[in-house]
Image 1 (cartoon, each protein chain N blue to C red):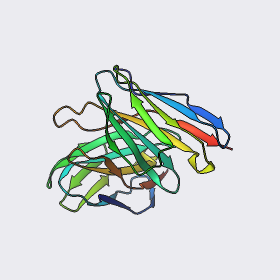
Image 2: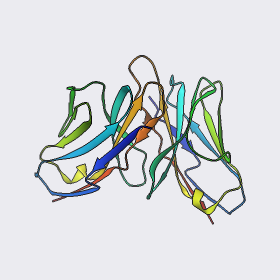
Image 3: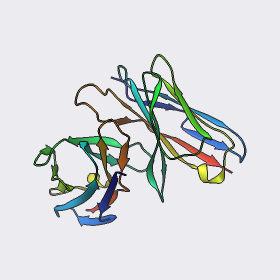
Image 4: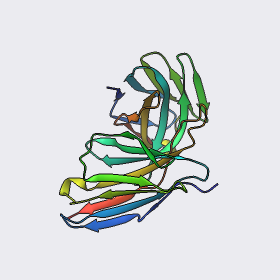
Length: 114
Length: 109
């Protein structure tokens, strides 16, 4: 079974620009979560989508948004980029069936904001 | 709010020197406690899920245990390839998963 894929793997943007990151979950998984990882803060939860609906949301400003498509693929958008948005953005998928709640992570997208 | 605290922040072991990593948590209605391993520049790799106090799971040199307030990841006779950051996370009900900041393990040959 193919794992979680994320594109692009690396991005360099400048302040004020916007960016869209993409995530394809493991086949059959309907839940996709997004995290921001920085050296100082660790893994911070952004949001979770399940069957195209946002189920949970973290404490991030409205510049961070996401969506999920009918095939479970998900995108995350960050508008008006700030220097502090430089981070590794991780996507994780989960089947959320019965007790199976563990998340499987993609390799991440490394975003650098200059 | 759910909280996860991992200790120590960093641990340096000689090859073969067994030790334990700690994960203390505060959560209302634990649905699951997760352990992950993360190598530099990569996404976390799932290791274990523990659901209730008293539960234990093993995989190769790793053994995870759970009490009502904490979890331990025991590493027996570690090898250099076990070097990584180990992350603990908890989930309450259908809420978000909350991660600790991790323990960076270095195993020296």
